[in-house]
Length: 312
Image (cartoon, rainbow, N blue to C red; front, side, top):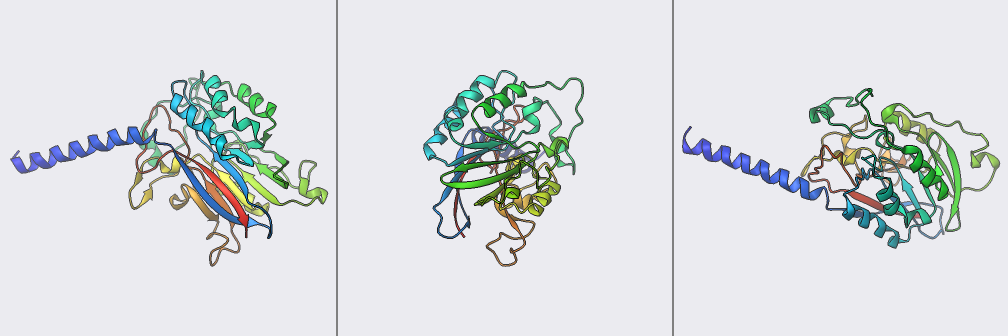
């Protein structure tokens, strides 16, 4: 091989090694996103919602624990956790420590697939398939999810796994609806009008919030039909490996890649944009973690989001 091709090959190898090294660093470069949502009735004060998702916490991630604990300094009126909190059977104590200050706030949660089952080593190329799910098998390691469930419930957080709920915060009455993880086909959308549907009692509600882990289109359509004002989801990791100037290549569900993270409308443009009158607000968190078997991110920093809800 002549010197020219050798230099090209060497350059490609060096570029690939540099990108890999950076992706390992970026996976621990946590970002706090600030988003404003013009959604409240006129004259109301702002309402702050902290959206955390996909921590995929392991016992050794002390920097992530400290970063998550510090989120309480944002003084949110409501914390919403959209699942996949841990990635190791010994991660309960670190998770409880990380979330301790946030559990003192009003909150709501749903479960993700990796709240039930520990991540497994998989072929990364499978994520390029239309449906990247892998059937559970006997070697899947169950996580102590009931212990986490008791922690969240004992703090007063609303369990929205295929449930409805309600809460009051900052002088506002909120109705809530959620589903269990659609990625594992555990979602069963709760019927409206039951005893747990506060809207059916005739009480005034300032905001109807939808919460789910994996933003599959069927779930988002049900949230829209249920008149959710805002839907919060996670699962996608924002694509995890993105192309600068282009964005995510995959979402690991049937959501389109342009909605892989951030604030959008569903199913059309944002409600405050032309043509968005039939849409609801959708926020997808890029999440704070990765599988321990793929601890990399590229052009897609791990994140949590403080959504400030404002009068429309």
